[in-house]
Amino acid sequence: MPERSAARRFEDLIAWQKARELTKKVYEVTGKGHFAKDFGLRDQVRRSSVSIMANIAEGFERARQSEFHQFLSIAKSSCAERRSHLYVAHDAKYVDDGTFNELMSLAKEVSLVLGGLRSAVQRRRAEQKSHGC
Image 1 (cartoon, one colour):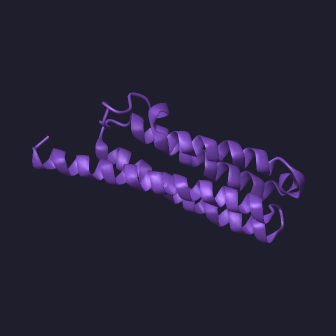
Image 2 (cartoon, one colour):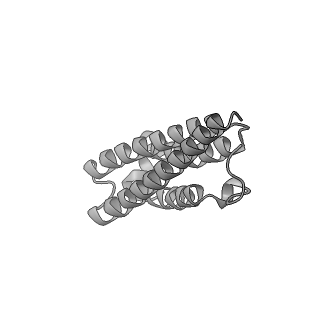
Image 3 (cartoon, one colour):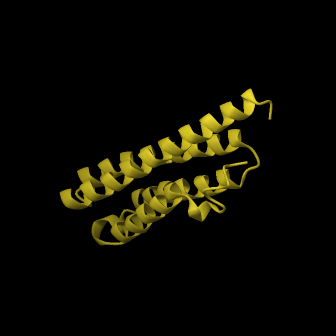
């Protein structure tokens, strides 16, 4: 099970909170102007953002550290996908430089927090293995 002393619910996880903040901003930005009319890219950016949150939540609720670690890896990958889509949106002039930088900064922050959480889960897994749990 994930470490419950610090977080009793997935909503308590900083990684999930940051991913929620990113997703909220993504929905705001993709609902305006030309971006809103590019249904394919708009939906892809939104789905990848929602996927980050969902995988953190789903992994947290799993029974084993190994599963939580796997879902955090998937969430981190979705964060990279979202950053990649952001380049497309920027190149297509759907977002200006300021918005691009803001969203990219948020996405990088989420990725860093996910990486830290994933490392902590990996350490916990190693501890459990060494203690025969």
